[in-house]
Length: 424
Image 1 (tube, rainbow, N blue to C red):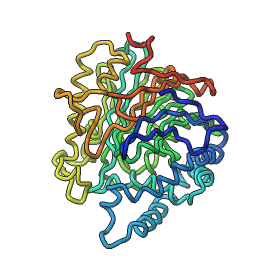
Image 2 (tube, rainbow, N blue to C red):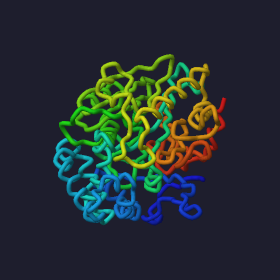
Image 3 (cartoon, rainbow, N blue to C red):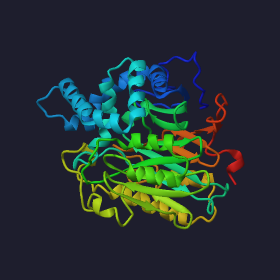
Image 4 (tube, one colour):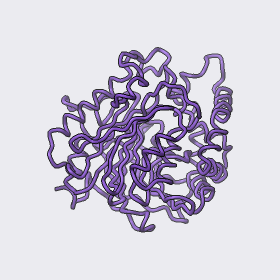
């Protein structure tokens, strides 16, 4: 699976999706889409090149179980979608325009290029704003940073498994955004979205976003994916990013791994109004979905909270933090046994299926009935390098993008688990 750079002759409807048998998704190649210009122009190019995916996302959203579980029984799905879309716009439009102006402009371009109403793009952001609700949880993820002192390749390594319902996987995209207004970025997101969940910028600053469950009430309805994008576009060092993230308007919770080209690495734990910063211990930082900073734990969901019958069927009766705690402990156990850690070592950890060897909802490589590892990402901030696969890392091939922010048009390499020169 070698990802091809998106050229002008490539169909704007092709995201590189390969269908599997029956209803099962097949493997997807990772194509890097080149976007350039101001934010409207980059948005328009994104909308044009990803038009089919964006339109299908809007059409298929009502099939998502989490969406259906929120819908009142008496209300038709199309009417509920219309009302939910209207509410999403009402909740977010003013705040996004006031505090994320560039991303609002990008959304206008995406809508124009994709030939959809801009209001539908707000629905792709709405899941993040629903996070504080007691009975509706989306997302999970496991992430780790290995600092220079423990890294066998001599630079910080950041890896993340992006755990989400498989419904979303066909809409994942990797973008190279050559901005004329802000820092340029290399990031992974979803086709309808202006923001991102993982990315690296031209200075080597990288941010990786795990959901967390902050319970304090937001003062502004700003999805954290937009805050991540703004951080990459405006900051060049980890310390700048800490200040920006902690002062930024936002809604919901997050555990953000932040690293820069100098090797300065931290976790920034966010709720809607509060933040904490966690430094590496013995060269390691691990993030799952619960807070670890002492000042943040009081804003977390209680450890004895359970998913209720109002949630999706696969989660009902399960303790909310069960998977997060077990994945954290397993990653800590495996990584603590290693002295110098190679990229192959990291990939083995993030392909781990537990002591039983069978992946499930509580393993780092997640194979749950609702949440599954749908994407895996490696970032090397000093090298400004991104490796991506769509699917489980246990049976996928990573595509290696070698500093496209400096060399647009350079062909990516296929990496079978790890580049040969870094497997020592």
